[in-house]
Image (cartoon, rainbow, N blue to C red):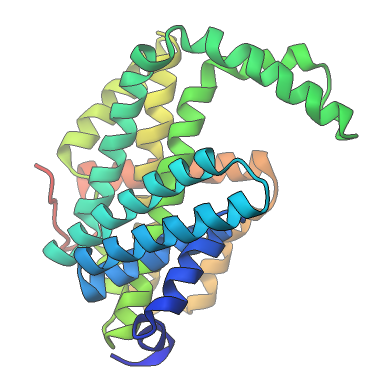
Length: 295
């Protein structure tokens, strides 16, 4: 093993501290999950699991000493790192990103389907919480409009939360696999370029899309958001594949990611376009090769 990844892997105390300290800080929590994935792929799930236990103890101690709400943060960390362990172990065992990402999208789908059992009336669950959030933001000087208007987002919240969780875990997996590949001196690109959601998820996505088009309720919309996240990642893989096989300059990919930085409207439209590309590729095969792990 070579590079900074190897240096970090060989220093357990430092990597445990990094996993623990990065988790509470917004987007840096993705790096925390990525480190768990990397260690799992390089050293195995047992050693990575022990790292997570030590990091959980360190995180709990640090948050408790600072007077924070450690049970909530520790519970979130345990769930995030546990999922990273499963994804990293699956990627290492089967030497593919396709299967762990398929598994992740299926877990997000299952979470949406179980939401009524866990939350009851999901729209009624989210509506007052959204209104309270809008009121709190307004009191903090952040202009968000009338708090009551936020209740209109309630039917979408279950899908948005599940899709966000799928996307963040996917990014952690991709980063961790990239770190691991570089550390092992291997190419990461072939793993990503072969990404495919497969027939089962394709059928689920088609059914959810039809149901959403018929306006059959929040559940159909939520499933479209979750499944669409997986197919958007496949669409990005297709675009990367096109640039690679055609020998186009790599900087052209800036045009692919730029819309994601231009605000919510441009980001949503671009994400929908990438999901459409991924769905078409899944059905008709826009790339040569690749594997479908989930039949």
